[in-house]
Image (cartoon, rainbow, N blue to C red; front, top):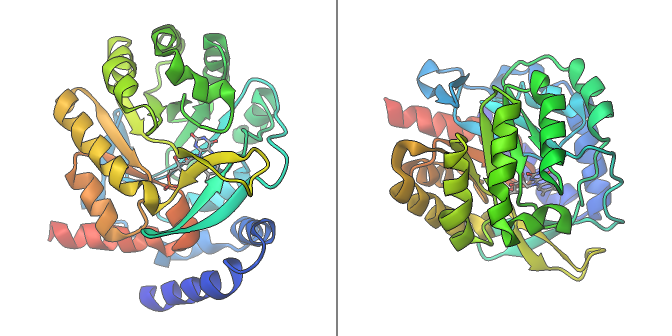
Length: 329
Ligand SMILES: Cc1cc2nc3c(=O)[nH]c(=O)nc-3n(C[C@H](O)[C@H](O)[C@H](O)COP(=O)(O)O)c2cc1C
C-alpha cells in the first residue's frame, strides 16, 4: 500500500507538478496540503516507540523534522499528522515582510537529483499577526518556532513573542536570500551577544541554524559562541547561496540532494570536533531512506527535510521511518 501511494505521488510530481510553471505547482501543492485531510490517514505514520529521540530534552516520536518553510498554520496543522517527529514554522521577523518579487522559486535538475532554488526573502506576517495564528494551532507533534532578524533585539523580540507557542526555538542566522540574515556570518563576533540575549530570554531549548557557506566561521566562532552561551543544538543547515538568473534577485538558496554531500561532511566533522557537547540536526538534501541513514550515522541527532518532501512526496517520511525501524530489529 505504501509503495502504491508513493508511486502515485511520484507519477503526479513527474508528469504534472514538475511540468507546470513553479507558481502553479506551488499553488496546487499548498492547496492540497491545506485542504486534503491526508493527516487523518495512518499510512503516513510509523509509531514504533523505538524510533523516539529527545532533542533539547523534548521527546520527538522520531528523528525527522519538517524544516522551516511554511508559515500557514493550516498547512503546519496537516503536516503534524504526516509522520514527522517535529515540525518547524517559517522564520518570523518582528514586522511583516512581503518577501521578494516573483519569481522566488525555481526547480533545478542536478546530477544528484531534483532540487530547488529560492529567494523567498522572508515573506511572513510579522510577530504580532503570527502570535495570533499560532494561538489556534494544536500541537499534535512538537512545534519549532523560528526567528530571523538584523539585530540582537530582533531575535529577542521574536523569541519572547513566539516562545510560548513553540516547544523549541530556532534562530535563523543563515538564509542566503536577504542581507538581513546572511550578513551575520560575515560579522560572527557579534553573534555571541545575540546568543546570550536569546538564551536569557527563554527557557525553551534553542537551536542555531547555520549556513553551509561559512564552514570555518561556523566551526571556529559561531558554534563555540553558541556553546558558551548555553545553546547546545545546531542545525547544519540552511541552503547554499548560488547564482540563479531565473530568480528576481539573480541569486538564491540551493536546496535538495546537490547540497547533501557537503552537509554530510559538515555533520561528521562537527560531531568529531564537538563530541556530545551538542545535538545536531542534519538538514540539506535528505530525500531518501539511505541519505537519512547516512546523516544519522555521521552523527546527526535528527534530520531536517524540506525539498525531499516536495520532490519525493509526503510518503518519504514513512519510507525513511520504515527503513530506520528495520535497522532496529
Ligand atoms: C522556499 C523555501 C523557503 C525556505 N524558508 C526558510 C525559512 O524561512 N527559514 C529557514 O531557516 N530556512 C528556510 N528554508 C531552508 C530549509 O528549511 C532547509 O534548510 C533547506 O531547504 C535545506 O534542506 P532541504 O535540502 O531538505 O530542502 C527554505 C527553503 C525553501 C526551499
